[in-house]
Amino acid sequence: MNLTDYVKKVSEEDFGKSFRHQAVWNSRLRSTGGRFFPKDGHLDFNIKLYEEFGQEIFRRIVRHELCHYHLYFEKKGYKHQDTDFKTLLQKVDGLRYAPKSQKEEASYHIYCCQKCGQQYPRKRLVDTKKFRCGRCLGKLKLQ
Image (cartoon, rainbow, N blue to C red; front, side, top):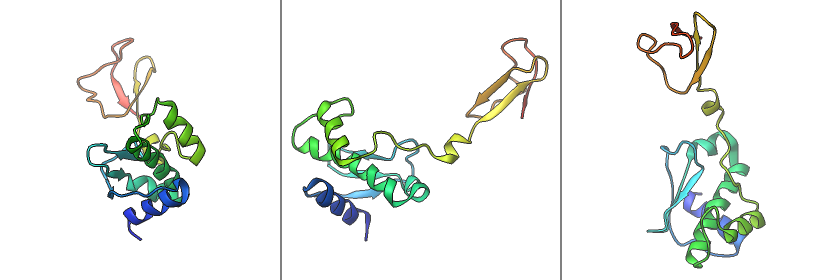
């Protein structure tokens, strides 16, 4: 079963409404489970979250995006802060936030000052020749 057919199935079973647009995988998504595009009605989904967390969590992500989809076409509040959205999401047991990937959580680099021991967690690599400790101006070392 392809992704669009799966989304149509979830829409019929959980909402009792039809899904009439396309659903596609987007491997570039990082921190979100999916996206709804009001301009053309299609949905993007994060394939990495599906692979890491499985069918059950992914179905809840699909429900979240379908809440945006159905509320938008019913001309109701479809944004995260809207009461209509929050109510429908709770009713169908959709995920409010995408789960954090284990790879995403473990991707911090810890730098330590060689002089005072101050630690600096960073997502990106730092040029240790250029940057120094903010406390004592000591040299930084990647742990």
